[in-house]
Image 1 (tube, helix red, strand yellow):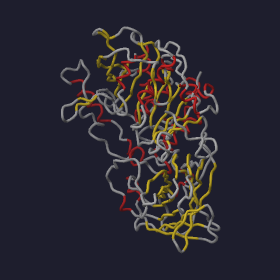
Image 2 (tube, one colour):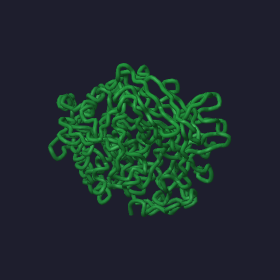
Image 3 (cartoon, helix red, strand yellow):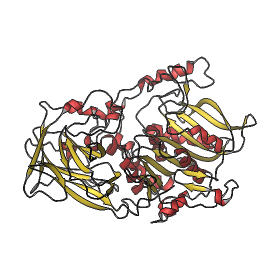
Image 4 (cartoon, helix red, strand yellow):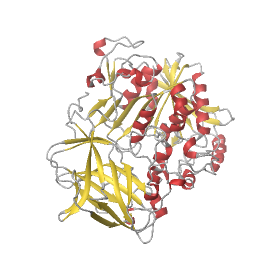
Length: 602
């Protein structure tokens, strides 16, 4: 049974470590079996100690040949003949790369775990170059477009039909490789039973062009690997001539930053794509078909990643989402959680029918910063979590500086800054998470907390802004500041002022402010006239310890926002944040009780 119907609403935290008897599980004493988030033993021991790799091309429906690396477990020197479930990766990051130092890398861009090791537990693993990439033929029409979805359908059904397959197929991977799983789910191949997408979107516009601003990591130029440098040919291509032919076809690949530049609004038509790109490539556009015929999903990322809200929105809209995991790290990283064990127990349940209890656990596992050692992880079966209360903290100024406080200033206040474009460069940022921007705009700081307090959820800001320009970008950062002055950004958000009109989302957006961002909604600013800008910040979970302060920093530029260069105003705009009577600016903060919601899982 799929979805929330198989969850126990309000399940006790202890349920995450329930030990159950497995159906079809290896013989092991029940007392030796453990199945909990990040912990898995006694259900799926290593059955093999080696795997064999072969590579070849597989044609899809239009004749385009896709390059495949296939990994099968080996016994007595030969690939096992038992029909096994298949887990595959659909990647633009090259299934196999010869590095400049001569070493060979085979992972398809999945660095957080070694997928090939699933073969040792009784799986077949395949890594496939997307069309227009690596050793695959064809030309990329668009990132995760309907063409790639059809390719994913064909590859899934081909894998399911092979004599070494039991007909049950899963997928895994992160970032683009997470998105290719969503893309496969859109196509609803009948043999695709379970996917494990990391750091991917629910609605592509809400992510790529969040707040009307194209995310900086979607504005980079193509790099040598994108163009196939170092790609490995398939086994039969001894002289590399097929690889050369394939790479010739890649010259016609679309450059996505150029497409996105031409479609700044949600309802824009892309001439290069011949479609409304945002609609064509969004999971949200196909949710009815996915719920009826799609696979179950385990969605994951870290708090320090701009994909985080998408996982909760996807869960709110798709009953297929049976698990969500949010760790402490940045994009596609998992150093503090055993992600391999988590993949294994998930695929064991949904591809091997081993009753290991994962489907009876609370559906959300998440990390809390500053928690006591050993108590950083918690679980919940609802989002927002039980006990959440939103508190409104206002910004204002006084003789002793700019303040963030639960009480609104008695009279009107103003705090002004000149947009600091010096923080922006034309270089592609190497980190997706910002450092403190204190000093590059205006900062509103709370008094030190007198007791510990916990924030878990989505902060929302509402800022009355006036500017000397007809448009401009506003960035807000929620920081925790230690007594020694060290600041850590816990949440941030952005909004282009002309996209400030609020609308009603066509799906469950968790009650957060949603901007339709159609061309008809475009509202230039009137210089000097205040307007209200309301937008959500990325969610987080952190404990503000006694003696720490909260700080809200508002700027007009972000170091990671390369696209800001394209809309730089001259002279740099003067921006004023208004507060107090008549134009209250504030941040709504999701406070929750510290106990009993933080629990020891290990």
